[in-house]
Image (cartoon, rainbow, N blue to C red; front, side, top):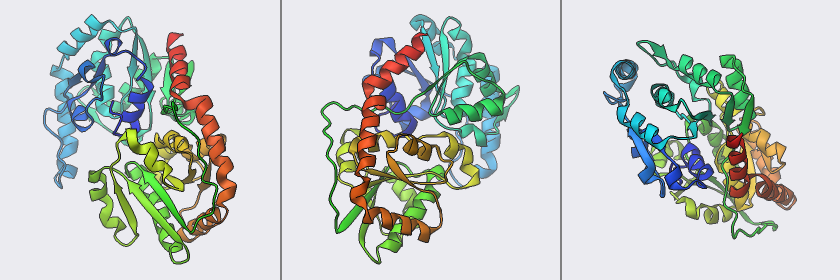
Length: 387
């Protein structure tokens, strides 16, 4: 639960920010907490567990040994780990509601180990993407797919980033919930004033904010190459705001693409930076490898983009959940080709008619106010959990 880490971490923080710290207990892995330390005021309400008896290798040897390391770690934890201190803390806290929100295999496994401590609680699984599609983790006495099916089957109310993701899980695991709450990253609209960029310009700035994981990167490259192509005929910049580690990881692939690195921006300052752009880019992978992720996951950044009141441009396949969201609320334009010249042609046409796109911005801000403000999302979540 870290408001500056984007994605799942940011969304978890924002949707539960209305809960008083004394009424909240957050359980995560030691490794996850090191990567994304829990933000105030929940840091003191955080407990950690450790499934990594032997650390997974993050070097070249990893591809040869990590499968065995994971098998050993989970087998050892299945047989010997009791999570005694955490179970006692849960018993003393006596929760009414448990949100089981795994962003990886260790979260599902921890739920499995702690489940007996939740016997008097209402349990709600919460997934933001389909990382399970590519997970084949097994250990002595179990595997990740069976535990996930068990979690979903035993609990009839789910929280999901989209109904599409719920449908993917229902079909794969042959389970169906009685109730689904589709929930997105909420935004704080206090003091926000809508300011539309109505004028044509000599130079346009297109901004992308966030990490460039594999489930986004190929579509981002399409747009980077399309923008490089357009730079031969018009003034246009592509600015990337991301963590320094993410930039170092990807920068060699941008060497000839004129991508401008804008640095890392803290979440409290991101709206101001996004509003400096003319268009905001969201990318969804075209590859078959990431198809279920593209179909099921709506990215956290979209509601932040809507708050910035700038034109959202989505690049990805027609089946992308991001694009369904933009079309549902008529709040952005979708480029649904990974052919660079065609993408450049469509982008050029968008910029030639930039004044006409203001209605998308207005629609997005209205949808934000009606559906995705802190007040609206917190109320829907409270009502859903109260049933």
